Image 1 (cartoon, rainbow, N blue to C red):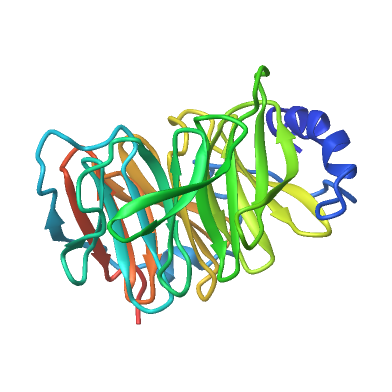
Image 2 (image 1 turned 45 degrees about the vertical axis):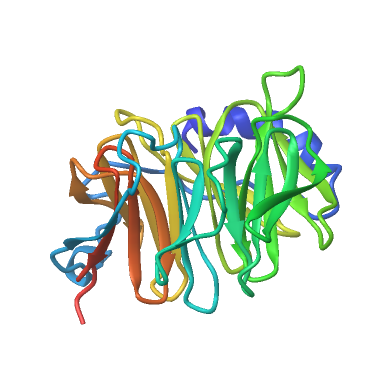
Amino acid sequence: MDERLKKPLIALAVPLMAIPAVVILVIAAKVLMSGGADAVPESQALEKLGKPLVSSVVRSGTPGVVASRPSLASDSIGGLYVGWGGNIVEVRANRPLLTAPDPGVTSFAATPDGLVVTVRGDRLGYVSGGAVQDRVRLPSAKMRVERIAADRLILFGPAVSTRTWAVYMVAKGGSYSKLFTFPGEIGAVAGTDDGFFFAAFGGVYKVEFGKRVVPVLYLPTRPGVRSMAYDSGRRALFLSTEDAVYVYLEGRLVRLLSKVSGTLGLRHDGLYILSETRQELLKVDNIFRS
């Protein structure tokens, strides 16, 4: 195992083992170094990839007012939501959810039935009646919320008065419980069938609920991962850095797009990128060969 990924996992072991939901049994997965052309010789990943085609879906209606970390979410009924300029817009209907922009909203996630859960300051809430309804107090004002499964939301952010980051599971009604703390900043998360991925310390790890935490890959010379999305059907993990989008497939890390990056979102009809630089929502087609 690469020592750069092993060290933070050692620090992670104690708090995880104290939490029934996640227990480390064995950390034995091989770390695959990106950029190694012969890392997995038997992989047919490259043969499965097509030539990605990028198209513009919608531009920000408030140029120059893009949030420092734009948000993107989708639900199970076809809704696609983007966060720009303090508002949340449902793309399909081109409809802002908030009557007036609310710059305090820093993160949100959509549930399968279309409820939009929000983080505003140190409060967890939801959108109703054209405004954010704050409900539950959070550990800090820098938390982010992500949906990792149809019935699961998690919160992650810096723990109060420490240099560690904490991950919480959100229950119905807004209550939450801590899963674990990690000795460093968590840059992004993405749900899987049996847990979720998280990016930290230049690496990507996978949390398998009730089993273990395993390292997936290490990006030695590239900037940190800003956003991730997982295609369970293809078993493909998409990663966005400061200047590119990659796909991790069959043990190979492949650059899909150069000079294009942003917040990633995956829906039934493909991969979306909310580009902070371009101030527009992009759609990527033809990623895989038919």
